[in-house]
Image 1 (cartoon, rainbow, N blue to C red):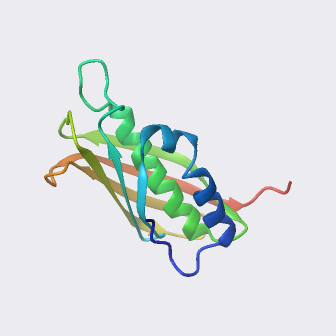
Image 2: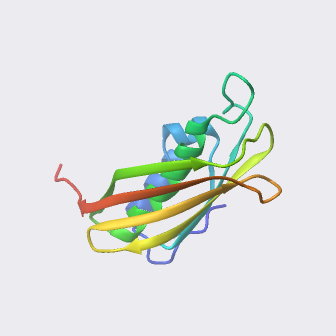
Image 3: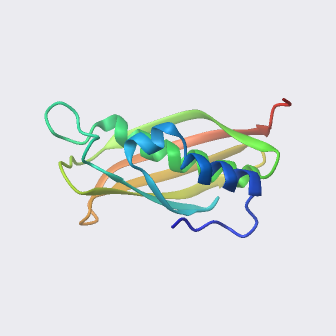
Length: 144
């Protein structure tokens, strides 16, 4: 069950619950445990996300990182605003072939127009697999 901050925009909660974080998040098997602007946590199975030689695909690390960083930034942006990713990078340290990947997102900077987060992915033993850093531009939601 996902832990949400008390002041989270009800519309964002509704979108998160009804879409389970979006189509790609569902396909990847990502499960959110905690979502706040300052810190977010999720897991992703290695099974179903491997590349051709059996290792977890490097892009899967980035998907997990961007999912956490984008949602944390959207929470920080607040009601009526959105977060749009403008930069992301990843450094892969170790490979993994089974189990769960644990993503732990922490805010580095939370401003009025920019939010930067660092997301560390670890294996079931707590060994660092990769580090992702993401910056989001925060803006008003477009009018429909």
